Image 1: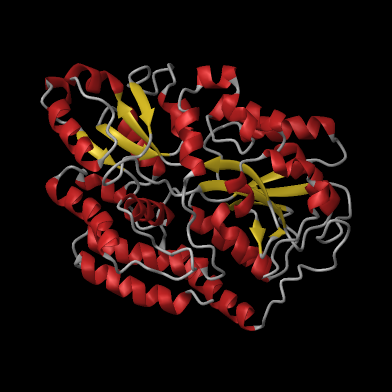
Image 2: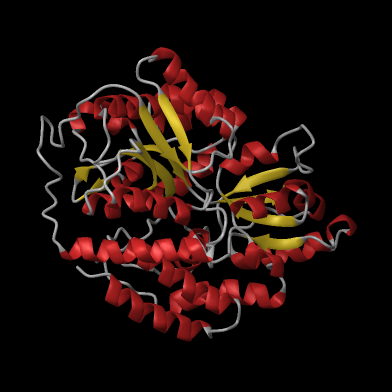
Length: 439
C-alpha cells in the first residue's frame, strides 16, 4: 500500500474539480441499485476481448510477470497495463476524470480500498455478481468488507495491507533491548541504541508525514494507538477528544524533540524506505512490501539481514494499524466486462497471490497463505501482519472521501509543522468532518 509523491498544484486542482463534480453527482441521488441485476446480484458482465488495466506505478517490478501469465493463456483477450502516477491522490484524480467523461479507456481499476464506496456511489464502477466470485469466503473477512458498498459487491480484494514496525535488530540486540510495544519503550530503546558509536547519527523513528494520503494513515494510527477514533462506529467524527490529542501529540512532540527527524516531514513510503535501507533510521513504520526490498543482497540495501519486523507500538501497548490494500473493480464504462471479470478472478486467485507475495512481500488477501509453512519461513512477519490486518481500523468509508482525507491532512500537517496548536487542529477538524460526513 503506497501513496508516493506529493500533490503538485496541478494535481490539487484536478482533485478539487473532481470533488466538485462528485458533490454534484451526489446531489443527484443514488438509489444504490447498481444497475440491472443478474443471478446473485450485480450487473450482467458481457463482452470479450482486449482490456486495459489502470493501476498505480508498479514499484515492485512484478506486475508485468503477473499480467504476462494471463496474456500467455488468453491471446485473444490480452491485458494492457496503464501505469498511473505513484501518488495515490493523483491516481484517484485521473480515474475520476476518466469516469466523469464516461471513457472506456480503463477497463479494470486498481482501487485503494477506501475508494470503493466513493466510486460505487457515483456509479463509476460496476456492481459484481457475487456468485461469479466463489472464492470470496476464503479471503480475510476485513478485506471483503472494503470491497462492498451498501452490502453489495463492487470490487474484489487482491492485496491487503497492515502497517508494520521495521527495526534494526542488530542494533537493538547489541544495546540489549527488545522490540518496543509502546511509544515510551520505543523512545527508551532509541536512547540506548544511539549510545552505540555506530548509531549516534541515526534517527529514531519515521513514518509517512508529508501532506498526502500517507499522512491520513499515520495520523489515524496515532489516534487509534492512543485509544481514540477518527470516526466512531456510529459513523460520526470524534477527533476532538483527549485520546486523539494524545495521539497527535505523540507525533508533534516527536518532531519537536528530534525523536522523529525533521526530514521525515517530507517522507512518503519510498523516501522513508530508502532512509531505513541506508541505515539512517532505527525504527520505521511502513507496509509489508518493504521487507523484500530491504532484504535484497544485491547491494541496494545496507541493512539486509540486519532488520526485524514487529507490530506497531501504541500508547499503552500494541498499536492499531490503518487497514490498507487494493481492490480490483470494473469500470462502468468498460467494454469486454466478461473478460475483465475473468482477469480479476485470475489476479485474485490463491495461485497468483502466492506468486506475488513470493516476489514482492505484498500482503495477500487469501487467509490460507498466512498459514503456509514455506511462506512463513520466507516471510517471518506474516503472523504479526495477519494480526495487524485483523485488528486494523478502516479509514472513513464515505462518498466524499477526497474531501475528508484532505481535511485530515491539512489539520495534521498544520500541527506537525507548528503552524496550528494540536488542540486547535483537532477542534477545527471535528467541525470540518462533521460538515462532510452525514448519515
